[in-house]
Image 1: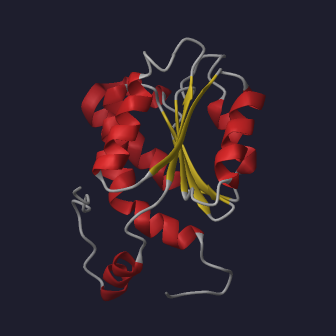
Image 2 (image 1 turned 180 degrees about the horizontal axis):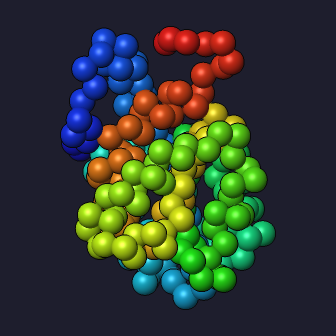
Length: 186
């Protein structure tokens, strides 16, 4: 299993130290948000699970829920409650249609939002697909010492988000999410 490295390695000693002390393996939960996907047709969830495993992270749970805020929130809370889970990945429900409620369902659970993730994702998406990238409401944050990602359902968008942004920083993000207030180093 190969570990993805950031394309743009930080040059400061403290950034290198953060990466060196970051967990190499982070237990991951995958939640597909869809009214139509089934275990047989969940190509986005399949790709998420495949990319996570290829990066050396264990998949601790996988679930499909409807585009319903209460169901989405309950699935995220179940994943967050699992001691072996350090990251929750949601795919679907982040677009602009009235049924896309993943951000509204999950954001109230977040203790810290990571706006840079969504900003960078949309920038990279714009380079790939043009102005349609503005329709994405992809997001990331932390909750209960764990990292939460809200991704589009498109396999191309999932691959972009994981390979270019999330997986290279997952250990670092997971390490930061578990720090106690006032704790600066590991």
